[in-house]
Image (cartoon, rainbow over the protein chains, first blue to last red):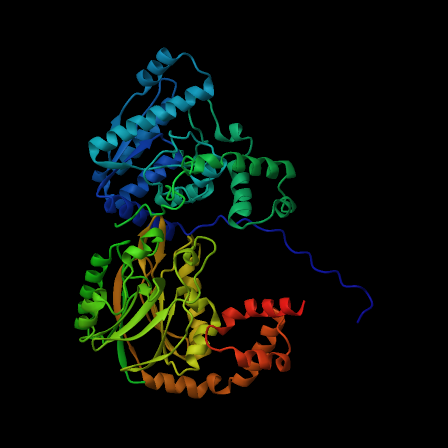
Length: 287
Length: 320
């Protein structure tokens, strides 16, 4: 013994792990889209194309899964939507060779405002998201298709989406991938570079930015969520890993407060067998 | 054991459709037979699918009833190992697997360790098995483990000490994504576990995992055969439906057990003594002398251990 007290090695702070193997992840997701579409008796999907990263990656996956003739991209601009968004969406349609249709939602949204009265910016954004949902679900019947979801895991966990709007879909291949992972998948899939690099936006009003609205960068919140949710690291340990305490608290509170968006509506139990409680069947029942 | 050609049937059953899955097993068994196999192994719950919940009683079959008749008929041409929902006497539903040969049910294994954590909730829907037995097949002594069973190393060890030289591991292992350099992580994790298990028990392992999707879960496949040295004899790819036939060579078993006589050297008496001591500590049982009388009055058996904590509590209660 040397007499000097050996200092116990400090444990390294937990490290978030967001790395994915894009090729295998892509194979799992392609198979998912194929299986869920076909087992429900469908052969096609409709997907709302915003020109952004998520809907582009969803469209690329669906095209690989079902072929270009079985994917219908719907371009759904509002009069204030950025013209660049529409150009990027058209670029995706051209690159994939999928079917596409443009439906201007301006008369729907403005008609709503005329009938129901003026609403503020956020409520108008919700109306736009739900107008798009109406068109997607309507066209899905016409095409005998399922509505493909595009919400990523970051959005789902933060509740950053419109209930019954952009959060509505029949199947969602991106819901277990954080924004950074969707981008990694997009890079591997070879989506157009400008889409890969653009600033994430819901484009519900001019110059809207996800990160400005959330008050945190995707880069940071993805890493924090990967620690808190995937690695089950305690908030205290997350703070010790370099995340500001206030941010950790704010994110946790947001996840808790938006839980209702991730669940079906609550059913009051007044019988012996209740939907979701003790009437428990898988969605893929007998398929 | 004798040389045997085993087919790995990496299939994707239809969720909750017993009739269609019986057809799938029969058709696949015919293909395996044409490929020269003498035994065909299917995944866990191949006759029912996995995410069953309230479907369990609807797809349950008794091994003595009509449900098994077509499979038993097929087993006259090729031995079949298949996972299914068993309705046992008393209407207990088990996640089970059967070895069928010559028109008979040779053995039924009921899954012992029903995972009830993370994405799993099997303990809600199934009764746990209470026995772990090796059995004789026309090709040698074997044992069956179902998925989570294999994550408890005592199971394979107990089968090996009953003479099992082939372990059939039937699985519905879901994937949890893919990492750079590791591919689909759950498939690799399984392969590591199976390699060590084959090495520890110096036994052949025939691992068959299903593929396909249920409610967004997806099953990884990656079925494989390992020899008693822990070397991969053959492997199927992840994710896709596939079949292959592997030959298990008794000579390799002999060489492995000669080179690594681990089972020979296991000290069963030491294990028994230590296990008894651990039981006493964990359940706060009386010392052996004290308990000798009480246990003499109680029937012992495979289910005795499960009852121990309750009887221990009642004895303590009486003392108070």
